[in-house]
Length: 108
Image (cartoon, rainbow, N blue to C red; front, side):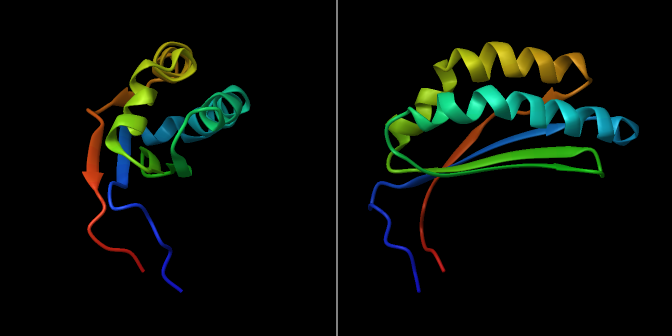
């Protein structure tokens, strides 16, 4: 069954890289930051889905689905995300690439 999304829905992708030899450290930090990020992000308007993953190949991805680009932009100002978690992740060698937001064209 195909999920019904608002016509204004967007996917937000936040990517990062790190030295693969630090995978265990980065993965542990990802778990630690989730303890305060999950409740903070859940309080934002318009969130439909949020996924986070760390790969042993030295990459990370946070992928979220929002009802609008305006609501997805709330993450740009969420202190827990842009100050606290970002600082903790950078401390273990994570480098972030610019966030990209995409209008949803189709779903399965």
